[in-house]
Image (tube, rainbow, N blue to C red; front, side, top):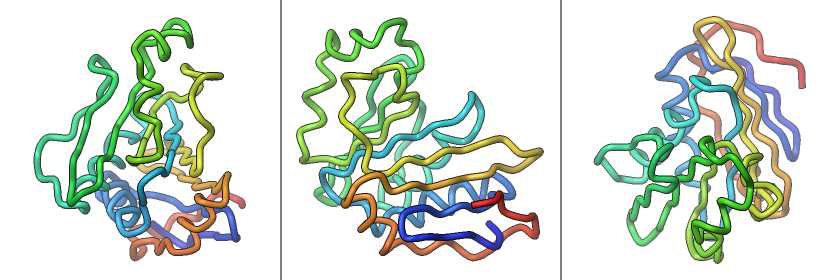
Length: 172
């Protein structure tokens, strides 16, 4: 990551490679708390699952971290924290979210990280933190936006990992 731009409710940076994406996920570990809803947005291959892998590893789960594209949700029970990783990519209709009973996971007791959240709208609860990854050559642009008070607290306590690239960050 290089030269991040930050405000009270947003952070923008450049991720040079997969290692930087993993490091960003790991940097989120100290600030995630029960009840947090995180939307992960970006095209296929943008690094959404890689970011989750970095987060889960930093929380202490060394097991496999794969995209829940076919299972819809993967549970990572880590140190008393339940992290639910969702992937709604395969939804053809938003109602599939309700039909699958996934709304029960968003009860405020776990951390819910959702890839392709737009495919479950309008039924998905609103995000606290929105992370958008955009492919940029071999690296990625990333923007973290706090969209609730819980999200603002998360970003206030968040520390970006050390710079790994000399690329210029996207405009804030």
